[in-house]
Amino acid sequence: MQFPTKLVVAASCAIHRLNGGFFKKYDDDVLSDKKKSNSSLLYKHFFEGEDVKVLKDDHARAEEIIDYLQGLGFKALERKLTDFESNVLKFVQSESVGKESIGIAASLPKVYLNKLEADSWQDRENQLGRQSNYVGNLNERGTFDLDIEFIKFIPRTGIYLVTANSKGNIVKFFAQTTDTNVGALVPNETYSVTAYVKSQQVSN
Image (cartoon, rainbow, N blue to C red; front, side, top):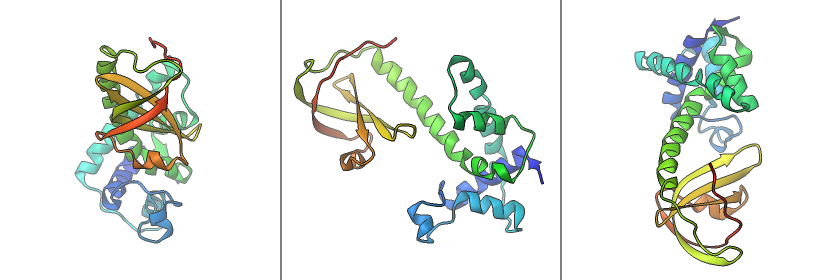
């Protein structure tokens, strides 16, 4: 059974709104029965008769999401898309989708919000980059007051990329997902960090 893609995404937007965000089946809140996973709610909406009230705003947001994510086609001309991005692009380019696509559909509102956040950060990073200078002494440890700007999780490698601002200069470092200190970092807060300065390169 197939359903119009726009209708599926609109229902996904409604569930994201009503569920207070995106929850996967193995998230703590789902395992403790505080929340239902978005994919299960979307499946029940279309295949088990447990209807979710879809508002006009949800339909409008669905249009925005589909239009925006179709832009991944242009990114494919610049770089190789990840497997997930390729699946998302295939989804939003389809006129209709079936139950095998419920998982992707359920995640799209969150994917869209993440992409908007990344776009906003890219503008900010470009602004900082135009005035950024080297920080610290190469191959030496130093202590820096860092304003945390952006924290990005990289699923493929299982690490965080943390970007900070040190007196107008960009500082980046990687951290493992098991590093409890990363969980304590909050964007827009300032921390005193002692770290070893590795090779510094100018990126184009």
